[in-house]
Length: 274
Image (cartoon, rainbow, N blue to C red; front, top):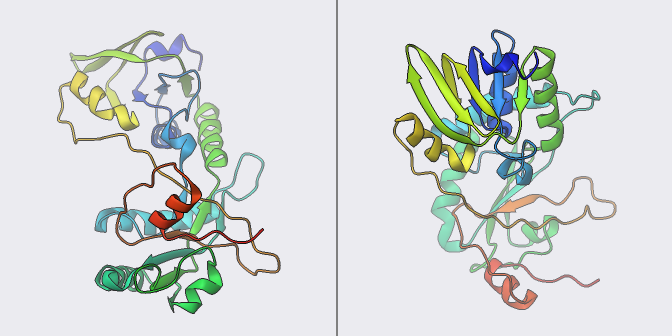
């Protein structure tokens, strides 16, 4: 379906990130779908910078249930070239001595969803993640989830985009939304790339979803764009598993970008010898 045909569709999806492309790819099997992306290319913002790690350490009951339901599809999903988009990668949830309650609650979550995990303490934590400071005030006790998945973000997005186009859908870039109006059962969406109409409108605008919601006259949910810091470590020579993805069970302040000494003091990390 060409761009001219997409001026009228069954559904218009605003946002070309993982949410927009995945829902559009599925809808395209049943109806005519167009995706409107404000930037010059899709996945320009959060989806292109995602850690893309499937585990049970984040979210409430609903989010964790969705995670559990998604794991099977992640394991079965293939990239455009036929390679798997997910690989098993351990997740290490660390806690100080005074965070035992939060870690126990997270262990209950892992039990509820029948996760494969181990409980580690002190030296055992150091053996799997030697960059951590060990002790009651740092990494004292941990859950090592051995069934979590690391996802290939780009492969997932390209798979959804390929499925969208294979089923007749279109992606329109450089199309920031300026207004949305509903009249006589149709949404009219005005963008810098033209006007688009559809009876169904999907708001998948990520950090800008509240702005789109206000244009559409529906309630906002208080979305705020946030930054994150991630430290990647190469796999240790001879290790059976890569270094685990590591986090605290409670949210910590993001360290400021100063010297390594100050940064490591804040995060509980210690430098390793070359």
